[in-house]
Length: 306
Image 1 (cartoon, helix red, strand yellow):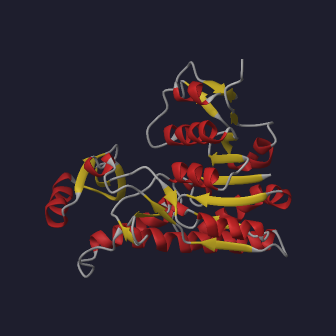
Image 2 (cartoon, one colour):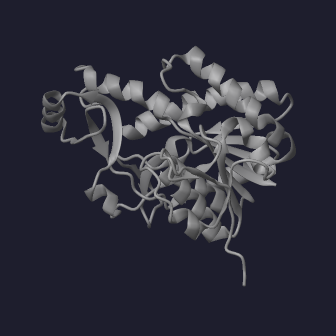
């Protein structure tokens, strides 16, 4: 079976932990331990978030006056893919001796006319006071918005349209290689229709939607979205909270899920199932093997034919 795994940011950094390299290597080892049994018996592609790694360099770029202009987001995305890919490759080679493993810096094509470029919504970088945030907005042309902790930069989050390296990933899989790729949603680029040339854009692509698109392009059997909760919950955080164990894309979209946490995961799972007729599942990292075998998590399946 071919499985695309989407690791949440908690796979490398848990709440309250410092973003130290040693801490992230320990967490990468834990993530790989949860995936090793799946990797032994299946073709596996692992995608991941990059929040734990992109934050510090983004903060440094904003705070260091010597970096003018600050390091662009496409460069930060490529850097974090390399760092996290290296952590995961080391852990995978230890857990799966003899298995070929490769980490691939991946680019994600978006449309230059995507409406998201007119409505930046994705928070990046550090929290500022209102005064500092607005000063940065004037100096650097940033869009600024308020989240639950303070004022932060917001950037566009366009819809992923294609994975540039999908054919390369396919070739690696065909040779028996386990592939780590599409970290943080991939480096966002636009593509020239005539030449195929790539141009980086200041944006962040949702990692779960990128994972769903990659799974579609690779003709995966299963999209496995792993996070820090055992399954999707209806009425999450209320007295009416109930686990959702088996659901169709339409039913999943009817759920009122929080923006920035479960909602993009639910949309990614629904999109993959609708477009491919395959299966998707959402659940806890440590239960990855059980989720893939239908004994844990939330299964998202096609509508049953009448």
